Image (cartoon, rainbow, N blue to C red; front, side, top):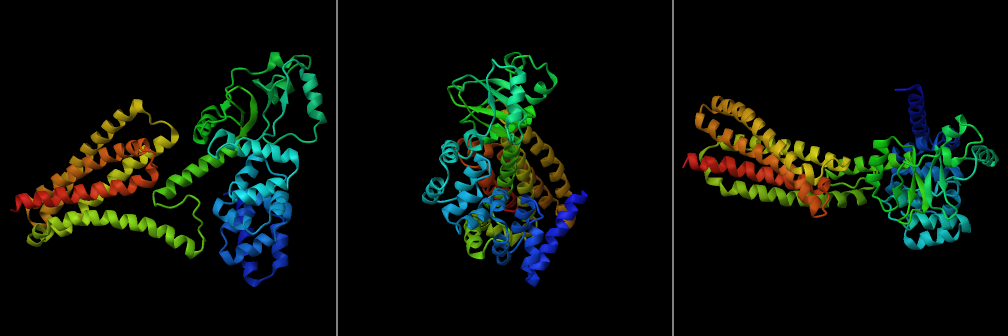
Length: 450
């Protein structure tokens, strides 16, 4: 861990201890020395009783940058307590896409008031970005970009850049457009610096670099950036008109949000679940998911109830039964996780789905044979009964094979029905492996011990 990170963590711990003592002046001084990300981290890591105190100690202009770093649920809490004029003031220095993200967290009526409180130029740019869904290139783009014409020289471009007070962050290329703003190509800054000043932009610009359609989904945009190692990329509409650009910092946010979504959805939680959110909000959300799990557990238990008479005859079945279901659940989750990750990265398609299902079935056969033999020996020695070893071996094989196939097919089916595989896949898969495990194990026992 670097010295800067260690120092930041020490500062955050120091602020928490000061807050407990109630010395607010010292807290304000310490906060003013922190970067927006560190302040956001402090807010996110603090219990509710400290959060509002800390928020009031943050300087007005800095609040907008901190809001931009906070999770949606937490930032919405602070936004609800601010009037539209305050929101317009603290977001004045942010990029258009960042302001749009913040305004999307507000009710539509409040958003309209915030927009009215802004100057005409800022409002027009924001409305252009907010007209596109959050999860598209249009929702990610920033309209703050430098455009130039192709018929001027690099010397003219240099003079133009020197007259500007600031250059937009992460500007690695200038956007070359026609007089009606049709996108032509890119002129890298490094080309301007190392080329002859009398060369024209047309001679030196890049024309083979792709642009991003404004309606492209954000995860597809992230994959393009990852594949091509881009820092920024131009966004165009269907008529090839340049609208804005997307920068790597926005793409990192998309990747992080997708990762959070996949992780939290596996537990049935919102990706913006706040670690310190109030009980009255957290408990109902978790209760819904627990209710769904209870329903699926009752389905699995009803399968056990069918074979109640067999279990009463052979007590060892009750001891070994959870092993079959558990092994199937773990094997299925492994397959499900690999497939969901592949879908998120865009590597799973109709062309290779069949191969993947076949591979997972083969892995299920291999692991089924391996662990069926292992558990059969253990069970036979444990209960001094070779028959029960044979039964659990066959059941284990069936369930591990089923888990591999189901884990590969489920994400594909759910996606075709427009259901999030990360959210629903785990519950359905667990139910399948539990039911198949119990029915195969107890069903075989009923046949052999009849």
